[in-house]
Length: 153
Image 1 (spheres, rainbow, N blue to C red):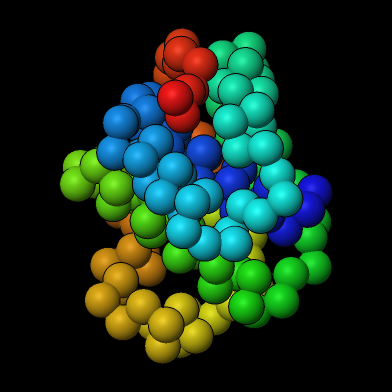
Image 2 (tube, helix red, strand yellow):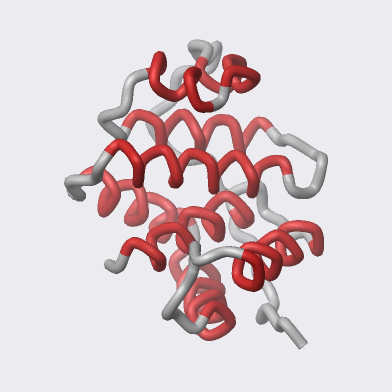
């Protein structure tokens, strides 16, 4: 998986893990696609709709596979920081932070090599995301949701 696609898939997983893809989250993707090189060289709309089809078909397996694939990559600290930044942006895009998003972040965090100290150096106001979780459960809690195609028109 290309790095740019990894960033997009990260954003999508965080958009979807709470069971709703909010308009503000789609606007974030559009803004990142238009104003940065984060998704440079990939067809954002096409990939998002592939992800929508996959998550509609496979549900939580899609999210688990993302985390598994992430754990197998040898990523630089810079790329891991960007993954974390992308996750934070997607979580906070709709101004409604759900427990499922925090839980999924903790699962993502567990797959990365970066230290909490390095994360806090980059994101000093995000300490709450790194606190131990009261609920310790390995499985992703994801109900069956059905998402619509995503359009940038």
